[in-house]
Image (cartoon, rainbow, N blue to C red; front, side, top):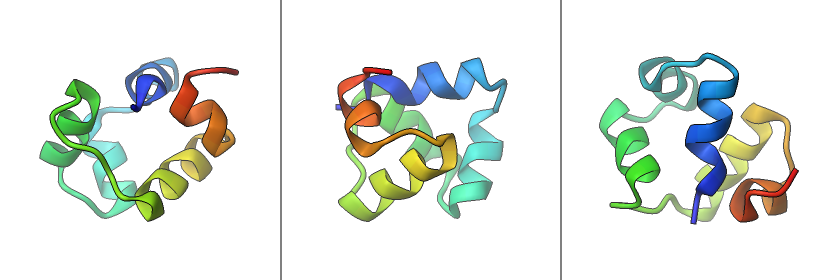
Length: 64
């Protein structure tokens, strides 16, 4: 689902830890989202899209 999470994080040179702290979640959660082992709820998807300055559609579909 989150094809853009790792791409955007690396493009912006943000560590999993820094992203986790900014979103008030664990680094493990970020890692699981990136590996597809877990999916965030809608509220978290919105927070992540806002954090990276992209639309929810861009964030979920991987289009920019």
